[in-house]
Image (cartoon, rainbow, N blue to C red):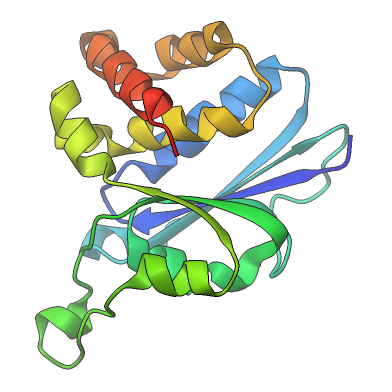
Length: 192
């Protein structure tokens, strides 16, 4: 199998590192060679965070270059727009529609771009956009956005639900497991 590339982007504190860890675990259990690279950025200041997950028969580098991502999984819609150049032709975007103001918007030096989902669609890109924050709250915690996104991402993989559930159990603390299973189910049950 040729190497597949996933870029997970978000803002510090949204759980992108847990999402990449969970995906790496899941894909290893499926028998793939997996490389995960964590690039934290300014995560402690609410800045951009990116992680790369690469898997296939044999993976030599953890880094995804521009134009190589099969998937962009985004926790925030402006981060989606920032990383579009990494998507390969025919690649898939799975994104939360939540907007988190970056520092230039907070200070009044810039305005948050309007209608980003529509602008991305007009470029002819495949985008699966949903309000993951509302679903995470429905599951029991706004911090479960990452797991809602993984539930939605599961639609694009030929991996049984039991394997996703086992990955959740292995990577989420027991006291939060039921909440995260509910978040995953809510993301998975969405229809496009």
